[in-house]
Image (cartoon, rainbow, N blue to C red; front, side):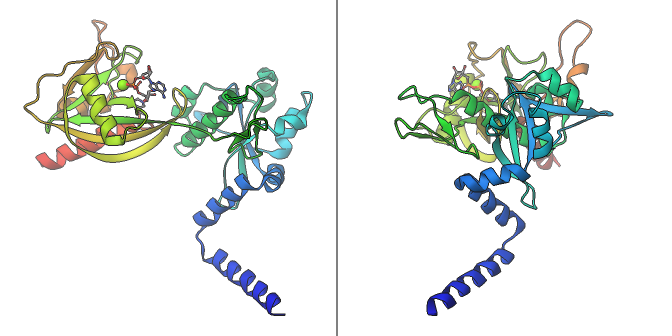
Length: 342
Ligand SMILES: NC(=O)c1ccc[n+]([C@@H]2O[C@H](COP(=O)([O-])OP(=O)(O)OC[C@H]3O[C@@H](n4cnc5c(N)ncnc54)[C@H](O)[C@@H]3O)[C@@H](O)[C@H]2O)c1
Ligand SMILES: [Mg+2]
């Protein structure tokens, strides 16, 4: 009898706990359950919504001037898949990417091996390169597309165990892959990258690589080396790329970035002494690196890429769009300078 009371008590207190938790906490716990519990996740696939990709390009619909990212129900997704052989097998390739506040799970599914024109005409939209998609969809959709594509990309490139060469199997949520021959479990990976806006107190340093679109300048960036902490990576990258020594730095924010594969961008502001030697640029990586004053930053932020070309064929500087964390660093620097000079 005591055991029954205890069980009832535990159930009652867990219900109270459940009500006490915020929507966010309940959502995160539900998502974690889906990752850990395979049968729950399979069940969730039948009531979830699906974002479609084709060879890592997300499916978008253009309505008027807006680009929408449609979420298909499981039934709608099946209807599309039934046009191709082995429909059920395709559903199993989906990966969990989140859920609504009401716990409706969201999945991403890459239909890369299927004829995309059939899907595009059926759903009246088009699979769009991620580099374009991220900058035309609504603000809250772009991080979702970026993380969904990164997870799909990771699965695509981790189909085999690097130890045995045997196929790996994904769990229903797509949060890991297992090699049954070696017992190795693989988890999705990303590379930490530091991005640093260097300032000498009154100017900030921006650079461009030859592969950038003409006129675009951004903050210095670089992949962290194994064993480095963020401070060491910032100091080394600034020394390598422009030959300056960082005197102090502070962290600003971070961002997941899907290019070239999956990076965690760690954004910092760094100060170099005003007495430091001139910039000495690493010409293997950079095409130009120079100081920008307050006025030039204000003008550059207003400029569109399309209006940067001048009559003599040269380009005036412009900076990355607001979806890129470099933009936030530049704006923060500007605010700080304006506050100092006010
Ligand atoms: N979101 C933003 O605002 C923003 C701004 C600037 C750069 N970035 C991203 O930061 C990334 C890194 O910047 P970078 O190109 O200056 O880096 P970098 O200065 O480290 O130079 C790139 C080189 O590093 C090597 N490298 C070392 N580890 C690597 C890894 N894990 N993956 C790929 N290459 C590796 C390669 O040889 C590569 O060519 C870029 O790919 C870019 O997409 C994002
Ligand atoms: Mg770099």
